[in-house]
Image 1: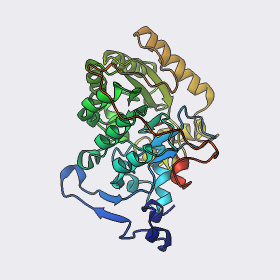
Image 2 (image 1 turned 60 degrees about the vertical axis):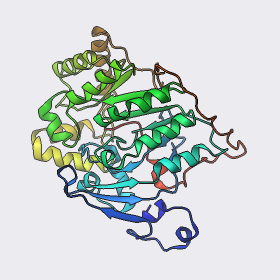
Image 3 (image 1 turned 180 degrees about the vertical axis):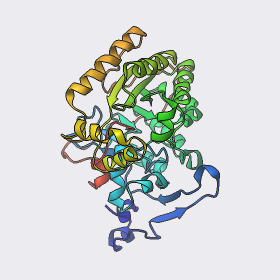
Length: 366
């Protein structure tokens, strides 16, 4: 995949030669403000926004929307790092600082949802990179995205580490009046020292838990994806207890643990970080992840059992896989009827061009 794959599907785009930085497709900007210093934003006009999850995926949803690529959260373990290589961008520091912004996301989504081929299925957001990362404060794509989903009564879910979601409380409530809305916040641990080194661009764990608390206070049920549980650094019984207790105190409706996994792209960057910060653990990680990207089943089961036992102790239940929770809105509103059923004569995706982006979606902000 190259930049030309993100162009509008006009005649010029179809005939122009592939280019990494084509001025007709990409506008690169920098902003001399403290929160964006050292970052470059590549503004593109995407050809499609609603992406179909590959059939072989085990994800509990079929469709996703990702207004951004790359993520200023800079989580050293983020699986989505590999996706930057499809644009010939660096998967390490480049993933953290070279952010692709699909500036036409709201209007493109509205166009796709109005298509007679769209059948109103659930759309998951925040499954690749965070839709409420730092860039959203400047580009404000999510209000338009949420408005389109609301207007077409499309059920959706959001997974985030960003506190900026609180800005869109009113939109979430109005959407919930007519469709199913599910919100989850990712908090894998509460250790501040670990947070500062492994998730340097994210809000602090306590600030994320405050998002859970505020959403709950406004009548919006919010679950917590306890991810990632980091081996040898955040998985002791005491650490798990502290984290689950904090999640319960924030009013989370559910807690779902997920052990760290290290896919190609993320694995190399994480091991580099490990050599710098915890060299004594390198051989332990090499042994634990010797069979591939995922921790052994015995380890995953142990973490899941411990967290669920703690959750039960503190009165928080595990989430139902893939379920979007209905938010009780104070004042129901009406919305236009969604588009007609999709063309059932084809098994192809209604949206997306089959590019690599459509084959890299997973349910994690790890």
